[in-house]
Image (tube, rainbow, N blue to C red; front, side):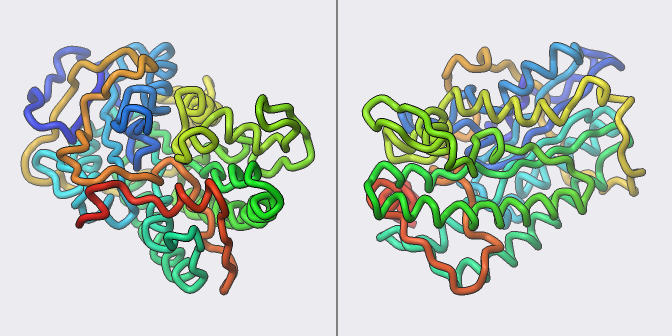
Length: 362
């Protein structure tokens, strides 16, 4: 069962369904968490959060999923709101904290993927150029916001709550297919992505989060191993993975496809080992939990079978007012050196500069 707090009219909380054995998995983030797919132009249940939940539920039968991911979310909007509507909560973070307060001691897992939109919705020109000054400014803001988000979530958790945040894959690698200039751009993107993920990892670890190595799962730094890709010939393993696991090489869109989300779910599952099952994992002692906000968060509603590609039921694009083109992609240049600029040529230039229709009008 899944709780989708961004959809109005859900049933009231019902703790009796699972009794004292009921535990919860709360997922937060951007379109990576909400499962946005460009081929159908909406959020779907192929999201890594849905696939991870299916795996976790096998070893934690009473587990229920509170699904909060919001397409187009940034670290700022996750804190302050404005992208998605959450009944009785001002923002995604507020909704999560209310749920954690209501189910105090019963939240087994919290996952988070956010930060890509901070950079890609602000620092990318229509030509695909990443502005160095903007990157440096945005990186500082993003790191501060991420620390606030993770700190608040960690404080609201219990001793047995496991927290996991993710690094990002590098869809700039798709530029490799555009010839010599694209290959140079792809190579130049790698150290920036690595620096970004290093910074993200540091923030997560400093606030008691484990880290899902999505970049590693996508072989983001492997330019050495050569793989044959139909229609493209021999390409580096990291380029092959981007073409295989995302829409970057087919629809010029950086979002992971269903197979990519499966790989991301595996990266999260890898740090949620069997011996860290709820009640046995180690975690810093929690501080006093925040008081719940006004009203009570909705509780479980039915969801489609994970991975079927069905509409997830939440984060309706017409309600959101914006569809992120970048939520699943890497925040690439955040925390990169001053003055560094990357020009993503060809395909990369198109999809990194992309703005979804409603966001363009606002």
